[in-house]
Image (tube, rainbow, N blue to C red; front, side):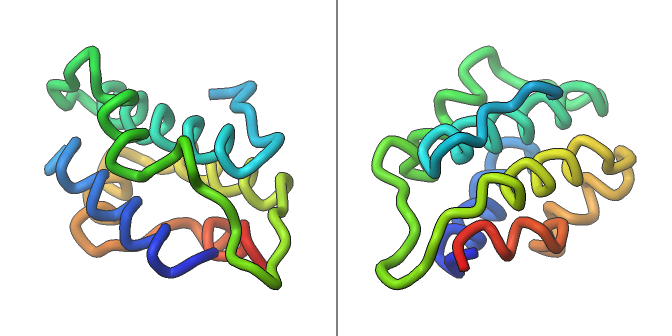
Length: 113
């Protein structure tokens, strides 16, 4: 996945959390929007006080409206789904640790390849 996008995800997650199923991963913008929602939903399910605007704020911070894979790379919808599924599968301790350490499931790093 694009390194800037990975860093943005971590930055956004830290801001939101310092912080499902059926996620739309049909294209880069939809996957980015779904990922933002997934982070917020996961944080909320783990007991974080998440604002109702969490997903829309995350989408804005991540630049989801204009997100695309870099030239010469291809978007992988299956990897995007695996990334989101991986985040959904985190325990609450893994969620907090991943946000602090800036780590994402392996599949998140192969969404654009």
